[in-house]
Length: 540
Image (tube, rainbow, N blue to C red; front, side, top):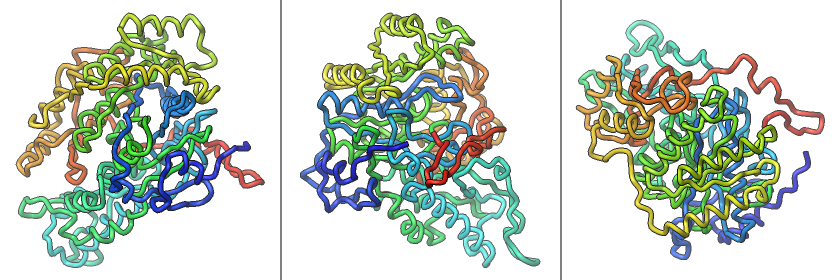
């Protein structure tokens, strides 16, 4: 398909970025240098708009399409706007969902490049993660001066691919008798769930990046004390690998609207938003920053408000809640009216966090006028503003009404009283319980013996009051993907807890969620090809 992309210098010109902060990579991409954030002539001036959604179906609800359409719509009504979006992981690209750069007339471009290797950021993150893994095993092999307990190594390996065979592995580290670390059990996780990904996403500058890398807990010594990555003297090499990857990527949308695409933590197993540095840059370069957060309000949105915002100081001025007829029908077990309870819960969540909210009803071809009107009328009953979005078929034109409603909401609420689900002083257990009750609609939390032991251990080490990142299914407000709608009175089951000391949070794993997804029976990879002209097909 022929694409009318504009040279990246035109995108640079739209944002009025001084050339000294731009490192061009090809005709349609660039890296933006961190020094931009130190320029006193570029103060923070923009307004942040978070884009989240109701509980999705397996195929997704077009949240990214709506976010791209919105930023294009803002530009069409005369606003200086930029979208900050996550980089796609190869796992979903070749797995079930396909590409994650939007679709139709609301796409991030060049989409094939963005969906695949892009500028090498994911490769750098994977390499830095596995370098630390290799250094740990080399340390064990060569005498183990830090006296690490080989059975209590906490640092896994990473791969940016869905591969269930790597969830549990046995490593043969030693050769011959007396070598430490032989045949120890370990695991792989997908790169999007790597602590390195979280660190790169949350760090505000190189000094903070270094400090967070140094703080990674790699395992436990035989004396019961945690051992950090800094003690392996690994940080310099990791910083070198991550240097280019730490710079946000500037690209464009289908309509030539500026886009910053950087980092890619999932929202079901990680914190689910683009990098803090890309968002900071957007707020200095544009009047409106559209920032897509992963999955629904119980996942990416909650984690932004409770974890990312307090850590970074970034605060949204409005939120767009994307919903569809198909998602609400799915939550209502085929009945749209019944599924509206799911919409109500997500509206309530956003309202409870204090963020002005606009519901974007993403229109699909098969939707009827009656179904769309029913959703709009229900939003009105809930006191929520709504707008139809046709960003897929019409691009920015199909999101002009939505864009106008968002601007109106921001202008009407110049000072938002933003809330969090928990207090920073709460224990991890208190934080998890408050999220369950306030955001998920559940009643209680049950911990496995392993999870309870780990929480107690992390508390003894001084990590008991860190923010929490709950890894759970995206297909239900509960931890069971088969429980639909807006269930109440249920219990969240925590099977494990992992420490991300460098990222600055605890990961509580609930239900049957896994950190290394597997491929479906018929993965998207089977439909991807390269034609005779060198064009990649089948990704979107």
